[in-house]
Length: 323
Image (cartoon, rainbow, N blue to C red; front, side, top):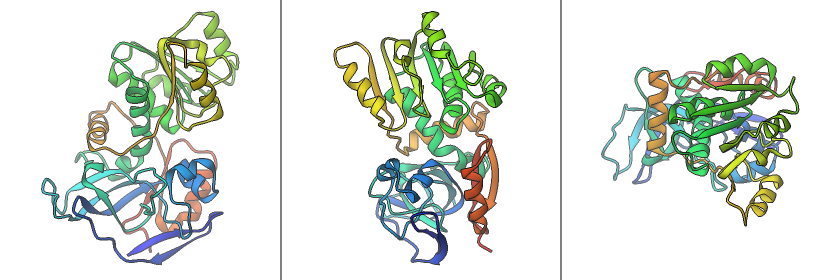
């Protein structure tokens, strides 16, 4: 099968490698669409995040998002058959050696979900890591309960944009969203009750503290909440980061003897969570912005777009995209 093989620094080539064989509890997926995300850059640049998400050893086979068609099933898989359309993401883990920028991947049956028929493959592929991260950050790591108040920093980004919509779908009583000027109108349309422009109001944390605003869950998607942000936590509230920064560690220590908590999300592809994401996509409760789509043969252009200014996910057409 064809696969995109990377070297550290970003050089890549198309190579032929053996098609994987599914284990007893796995399925073989023919990848129709994939997408680029920040983990891709972290791996090829050997950044800290990369060591949490992939085996950093050349040759690298990258890509996590996928939507595709079941090609074969393992002997223990009996609830899905060849031809079924599924989506999900390869697990972020230090032992990961596969990449979805390839014709085929194998995944555990419990790591993928049936793609709703009305949701395009490109949309399903674009949704996975960001929407799953947002859902698990708010609900699981943040301990969110219906009716609580949520603050989302970085609401114009991939995780943050999904988080605004997911918090609303989960029943938040109030959502305050922080984003840049260009994203204010869009974030408001996704259901945020209050949108603060960090560009024109850089002292937004100080202002919120003076207002005595409090939130049960704070999601700091870009891990850049200004100092004092934890003062916005309600009693028993939780602030969630997307990577374990030094600030996260300090907050964890600081909260040891308080009724507040700090955590960072380790997202996992799970069938039940993917099914919920698929339902929201199908019913229009979740919209995933897509900036552009490239055939896999145009990986150079796709990577340049990923590294520059964009208004959503950079999607890769894998099937029929090699020539």
